[in-house]
Image 1 (tube, one colour):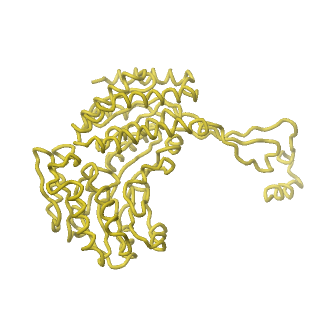
Image 2 (tube, rainbow, N blue to C red):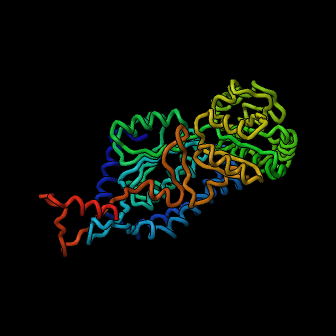
Image 3 (cartoon, rainbow, N blue to C red):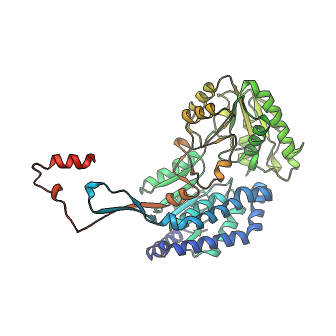
Length: 460
């Protein structure tokens, strides 16, 4: 484990390298992104094995939600980085006669990226792509809970890139605390709301800007006017992907009373179709990250009425895909983000009732609404606030590079993916370039009889 002095040495070397101006060269950035793509492709099997060991992720799920997503993001950045980095011309008012205005995107400097354990590869690499594309140096701190993926990440990055450019520092809570005591130009954190508060408090001591990708209780609202079979299928996939350990997984269902039973019947059928009659034997179903989270989730099984699943096994860190009916907002399962394969169900009679229930809670990272009724779709969009929304699907909005991903309120601040990542790790420098051809004297004293002209100019 590195010492505090070692951190200081690496950061000092990164500051010297950044000061050299090398990272401001767009060609250099593209070269580094291509190198990152190459090493990820070469190490694909090792990454998959690490994800299997940490979370029992299948090869398909590892590629779809981790490796492939990262490669897609790298390709997108390489394709667009030249246009992103190009100075942006903006309009200049008449009062600035004979001048031009531009916005320059310049790198922030040295950034700290702190990852989470549930998607331990992509939640490190996706923000790193933005940091590289914007021209920064970076320190990466992967989650120690996903120990195998952390090790693979460290090997991939530290053996591929010079430490004065990008470096992975492994360790536990103490390592994170030591890193947070250092001065960075930006901190990007993915994790829980409670830890996010700590990160923000530490960053505030040095006025370091932060991006916080947190979570919350993501509602999934199902209208009576929907395609029940497709709705059930998409809910089951989004909820039980990675054994429910997804920050934007449907956290609870709000279902129109008229279709509740039909939906639950279809959900049960989908679970069986996806994972078989005994999901513990399915090669496609994940496991809980560790014993602590397993025990936390098992306590949530003690509320309401389990109508699907509920089986669990500590030795295998297995909790079956579970649906719980007859829950109330006073139950523990409705008071915290579940972050596991447990889906509580609450029925409603009118959509305005469901909206009121959602709005009574902190703003979530995502919201899902299933309905064929476009007026109701607009009603949801107008009357709720969330980091993102998927209509008639779950989770998939994160796979659109042009859609910024991020939270609002308690679910986070700032966003990334695609150009949003580039913007997050860039400073937008405003430039006014004035000509010497003329020098209008109207702004200079004495001001007598000039006010009327100024008013006319500023209204034009």
